[in-house]
Image 1 (cartoon, helix red, strand yellow):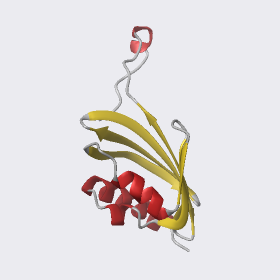
Image 2 (cartoon, rainbow, N blue to C red):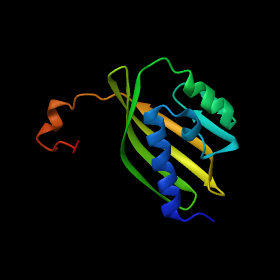
Image 3 (tube, rainbow, N blue to C red):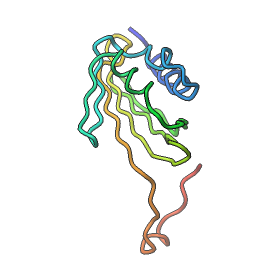
Image 4 (spheres, helix red, strand yellow):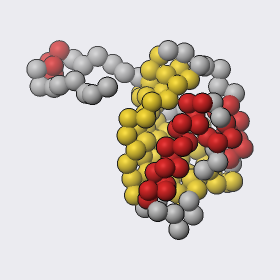
Amino acid sequence: MPTENTIKATIEQHWLASERGDIVAEHAMYAEQAVLDYPQSGERFRGRETIAAQRGEHPADRHFTVLRITGGGAVWVSECVITYDGAPTYSVSIMEFAGGEVTHETQYFADPFDAPESRRALSEGMPG
């Protein structure tokens, strides 16, 4: 049984491989029958090869910045900024593990927006 440190390191390697464009290393942590859901577009991808294929054919120049990885046990969350052709998009990836492999991932995407003037006096800027 993999330790939490091992799982976190595996996720970190996944995002580094994503940044390098190394499609094989990026998807090495997925179970053969893994499922990837994109709720905002209503898409579900079944199987490691299908998941890798749809990401590998993405036409944009992509870059990945990991803000935080948290989790424990079977459920881990990555908060990232994915830049598509220079435009940043915030992403939350929820990964479910079994036997050291991702069996299910749900990924959400959100574009940045300006804070309303009414809240500016109450908030401070986030790091990064």
